[in-house]
Image (cartoon, rainbow, N blue to C red):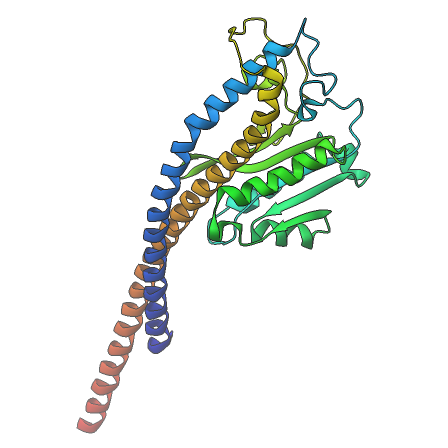
Length: 321
């Protein structure tokens, strides 16, 4: 027979846990609203900047001979042969958010064993890990982690994100890396996220306008393809001052910083949504377990009372005899 005291202690413990998960759900909901607002405010700016960069780059390309040389900008350099690849993984600093981190890390590993398998097997893939969880995961598995940014989301700021992207773009310009990818969770809804592994360098104007025959990002499956194709000929004509080349030189670094900041904001909103859903599930599970334990407690208590009554009746009958 179960010990009544043990069952009462378990019920008390589950009630305390339930209060904690409720509080964490409320905190996550408040943070989610703030993260969503920042994300939604950034999306129009990032989208318009993308359009301007695409228009500028496409207007400078003649006859579809797109960016074979870094004539317009070193960030448009298309390497003849890819020697080394950098992957920036945007995870989270805290846990208790369901499969938020696990699913992303699996998508990255799938990418490393898929389209990047040739470079990964030869040790030509480096990782920059953003968030404590991504740092711990990939270092524990002996990946080549060249950059660590634990505690990134404790003080989320554009300047910090820009520094990470600036370092990556500088190494690309210096030909240390021939391709740069960003892996993050894209916010879809409170209970759903898209795992995205997106190539950001070299910049392809075709991919910006959506006219490329290939894709420069992959969602859920983590499959990324090359960025090739010709520039669309239907580009609106504008007059730029002082000239498109000089403007591109200033806009392309800003474009990269904003795109990485967009990925960070998407990941932050997705993390809060995942944590909110996980804490809600934990609260419901605690309620169900509490109901089960209370039923078990009542059954044990009823059995104990029945046994005591039987003992009393038997004792009384023995005295009368």
